[in-house]
Length: 298
Length: 309
Image 1 (tube, rainbow over the protein chains, first blue to last red):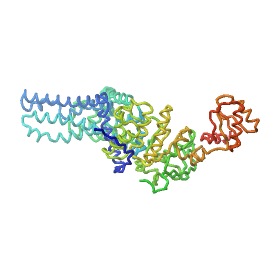
Image 2 (tube, rainbow over the protein chains, first blue to last red):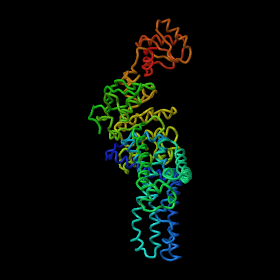
Image 3 (cartoon, chains in turn purple, red):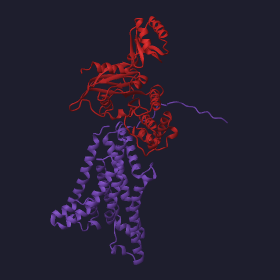
Image 4 (cartoon, helix red, strand yellow):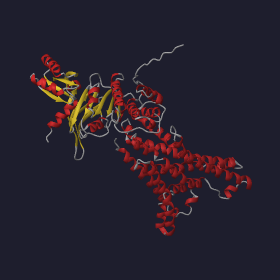
C-alpha cells in the first residue's frame, strides 16, 4: 500500500479572533506556566515546587503534631497547649513566601525584557498595562494558591484529628474565610513587591538578591533597633520590618497576635495604621510597576 | 478586516513626528497597496519611527496614519491583523518553537486549539516543522530568524512589517530568507513592508520602494522604475582591460571604468559592433556584456552628492 502526501499550501485563517481579552488570558496562562516551570526544563521546576512542598510540609507537620497531642494526651490538648494555629502558620510561612516570591517572581518580567520578547507582546493587540496586569494576576494566583493550599491541609488535618469533628467545624469554621483573606493579603504584598523590583532590572538574579536582602536583612536590623528605641519611634521602626507588614494584617484579620509579631513593638499601633501601612506598601509599588509598563514601547 | 479592492493597506498623510530636539519625520506622505514594499534609508532616516507610528506604538505630532483603513494610533485591535518582525533578538531560549508560536498566536487573539494548529502550519511553511519541539536556544541564527518571521505570520495578518530580516545571516541564510519573504506575499497573500539598508536585498525582493532621508520621503515608486536600463553597456573581460580601453577610444567610443568592468556610452547596434571589433583587436576574453541597469545604491550616492558639504 502506498500513500500520497498532499501539500495543500498556505491556508488563510478564517476563524474567530477573540482580540485583546484572549491576549490577556494568554499572558496570564503563560505567567502561571513560567512561575511553575511548566513547558520548561527540569531546572525551572525545582525552585517553585520546592517552596510549595516546604509550605505544605510545614502545615502537615503542624497538623500531625496537633493530631498526635489529641490522641496521646487526650481531647482538647492541642488547644490547651496553645499549639500553632492558622494565624501562626501565616507568620511562620511568611518568610518562606517572601523568599519564594523573591526567587520566582522576577522570572515573569525580567526574562521577557532581557530576551526582547516584550517587543513582540507590545506589537500585538495588547498594551503594556494589559501585559503587566496579566503577569501580576498570574503570579498573584500562584502565590495565593501557595498561601491557601497549606492552610487547607492544616485545616483538614486539625479537623480530622479532632475527636469530635463536627464540634471542631462549628467552632472553627470562621478560620476558613480568615485564612483565605490573610493568605490573599500576603500574596498580594509579596507579588507586588517582587514584580516592582523586577521591573527595574533585566536580570532575575539581581532582583532576587535585592529582594532577599531587603526581606531578610532588614528584619533583624529593624527588630534590634526597635527594641532599643522606646515609644512611638520604636513602633514605627518596627513597622519597617518588611516581612512583618502583611503579618500585622493577618493579626488584625484573626484578632490575635501570631508568634512572630507577638514581640514586635508595631503590634501596639492601632489596627487601622497597620492595615493602612500594608496598603501603602502594596498600592504604591503596584502603581509604580504599572506606570513603568504603561508607556513602554519596543 | 481588509480594505476594499484597490484601497491602500497603509496610508500616511502629512505625518510629522517631533521628539524634543529632533524631527524624526517631516511631513511624510505615502500609501502602500498590495505587494512587497521596501522602506529604505540610512540610520536616523525615520524608518523605525514610521513603523512605530504605523503599529500604533507612538503618537504622531501631526498628520494621520491609517492601517487597513483604521487609525493606527489608539487602536490596539488593528495590531491583531498586522505582524511585526523586529531586527533585534526577541526569542525566548528555554521554550520550544511550537510552544512559543502557539502562545504568540493566542496573544494575537486566536483561540487555543486554532493557535496550536496555526503554529504547526506556519513552522511547516518556513521549514522548521521537524525541529518544532526543540528549545529555541539551540537553534542556528538562520533558524531563529525564521522563527521570528513565523511569529509575525502565525496569526495570519493582512500585512507584515519586517525590520532588517536578513541582518546577521550568511549568504545562504540570506537567500533563504529573501525566498521566504517573496513566498509570504506570492503564496500566502500577505503584503509586506520591508525595512532594510541592503540595497541588493530590496532590489531583488520588493515591488516598490520608499526612500527616506532626514525624515522626508525623497523617492518612492516601482523598483523597476529605479532600476531601468540606462543608455550604456556594461562590459567585463578576464584580461587585457587596458588594451580594450585603448581599442575602444581609437574608435571614438566613450568608455569609463565601472568597478571591475567598463561602461560604454550608447546602447544602439553600432556600439555593440564597435565593442566586438575592439575585443577582437585587444584579444580580450569577454566575460559579460549587457545593457547596464541602474542600481538602487546609485539613488543614495546621488542623494549624498547633492547634499551640502
